Image (cartoon, rainbow, N blue to C red; front, side):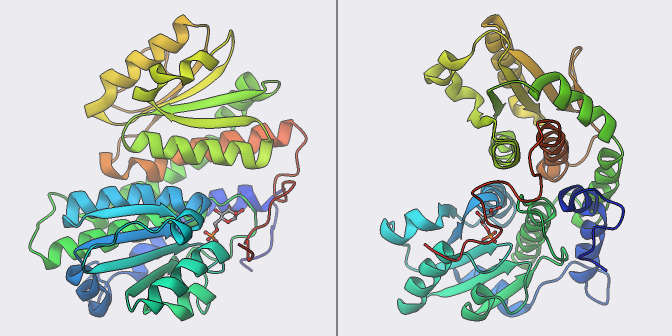
Length: 360
Ligand code: G6P
């Protein structure tokens, strides 16, 4: 069954490996009888009625929201704000006239998000919940639900739910765009199929990921992730994975911000994991790598095929640039897994953390 580890030593590893399957399942679940991507028309109407979308989430789901904002704004041309649930509930921004609230939550039970949902429902606003758990609190209390279809996620560190969230957000953005006659220059079904295949290739490269973890992360106190544009958001997620399960002090930084403070932290041997999957910022991130290397950093560059340079540590097969987070997060998940494993940490049940946090 879905909730048995089978031959896997940890749920986390099993759930990382399930990502290609989940991707293919999502494509099937969000297809209509004509084979086109499709979403309940009431949801699309609500999205189109809104003059602004407010994404509310916590943890990994918040990081998915940051990427989702790009899909929504670039493809469907709807302004999106992404907020940390706990902050939003006591520091609510001035809202637009016709807001739509989108709650992203693997469990559908996160109390911080629920507190916001209760507030916005009191104000009479519409809410959509994107969750892995049918019938969860956030699903029941919102007007609409989109399911992740990722199957039960047991490991505390979220993996397959994150990529499922990205896929569902991409489908929501693409279907909204189509409804508005904003034709996309690509076929999302096909591109998500390529993503699934790429995920499979990446999941087959565990030995390489284990080597990287051993080489960079066995004794280090800290590790920084750098990236620009969506690579920055994936870096935030990579850093969260690493800190959650290996207890290494890990932070994600926007490449352009390094010079404004962070670069002071670089010492001899500091591991820096740099993502280079975006052509329009490739020059910038390459410049950042040179800057940190000049200060003694030990760089691990993960790039996308076509943008690779000599010395890059790992190259992700080419896929649609906007969808790169669905693939580039996988090496980061695996590197975190092996770092935690070889540092003797309890991968599936890290200290001080709970899978779903039902208190504010
Ligand atoms: C907890 C978990 C995180 C998760 C966050 C949000 O803190 O440890 O892994 O990202 O909650 O959970 P949700 O179920 O709302 O996505």
